[in-house]
Image (cartoon, rainbow, N blue to C red; front, side, top):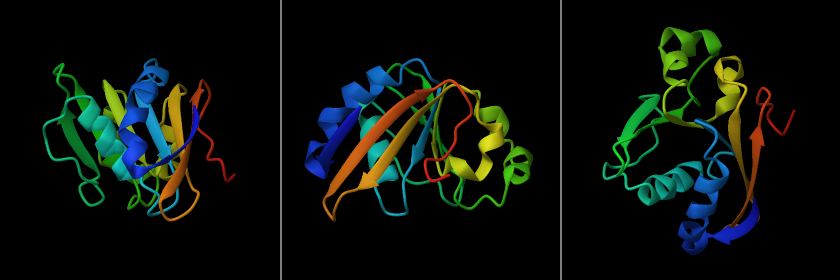
Length: 146
């Protein structure tokens, strides 16, 4: 997918994202600070029927949500992780192999990611517009800026 959108257009993209990413349990969100990673995840969770409050797990590292089909989503924010060792010590590596993991700041612990990931890149076009580019990867995640 390669789409340009505003916040009001975001819900219309959800069926396409779900369809594109359906073969990967781990979704990584790559974008600069303030680009809308958590906003996109909130829209995805709402589309999947999550009833819990969806917020960034920046301090908790992981939030757990349940979909309308009673499936678990682990929403992770690795921004505050120092390195992969800290992620492993926190038990995050085990969760990455769960039903569904949506990970913000995946570059903080690339080594614990599975080979198959659905990459969602958000590019800031301007103050109100974003571009989303997706890719299904069958090799280790490599941030686009490397």
